[in-house]
Length: 337
Image (cartoon, rainbow, N blue to C red; front, side):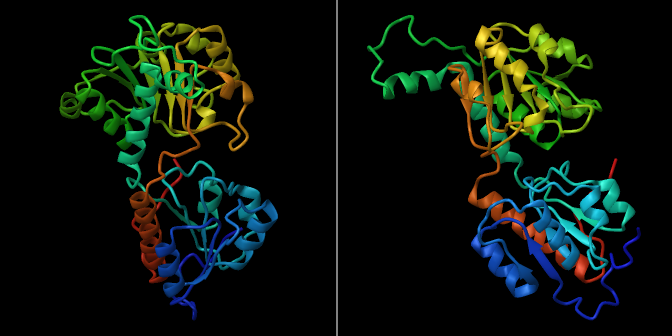
């Protein structure tokens, strides 16, 4: 079914499109959106139910969803004729059926590049915490179990000279590579397309086309690739079995990049030394066996959680809506592959 209203050129209410925002945004962003658009917010800040999303899609010109909203073909096919733009809060759009949106002439935008450094900082923080075993040390101190300094107590691994394997060498992967270089680590990476030689030289990065070899040579492996059918459970039992017993896995991408059953087994048996996770397959419901693992560093999806990043993402959304409302193609349009 075609949506003929993707352009607002001839619509009488084009100056103030009806915008539905599925989660709370920074106060300054919400205030600006209220000034510019006929905006409906979600004051409870709880993820909208499927039926609530269906009702919103039927009655708005623009939907502003987040990663907690699944906008699939079924919902899009029930959308109202006026829906012309889905302005996603965040860079990842795997929760939106881009192909179905395109078929209905609904534009989709995201907020690329906003959270690059914030996410890279967090990924490297997890890397340091996992490799140096700082979390078990902090836990022993807080639990009153620390007996004082000893030459062989709570030993971790130095970062300098170790091999950091990066899966996905986009903006965030490259930012992590810059940080790794500053810590004296060797950088190996796997990507759909090899980077230009000049950029590899800048990053001191070695391209590894064989994903299994990348896992086998890594002292730490960090995931920065998008979630797709080809990358779901990219970290599985077979690849974990290839890793060094001293290696760590870091994931700040999407939870389903990791087979959590396989990771639990690897952590419980000591097959790998540790993991640092900011995302989980069924968040906020996390497998209690993961949380019980003493060699896990876990954070509650904080990769983009900075005042600056969230404000900037909101500003990008406003810009995309304004471009669309004025009859122009938004600057951050996302197309299906």
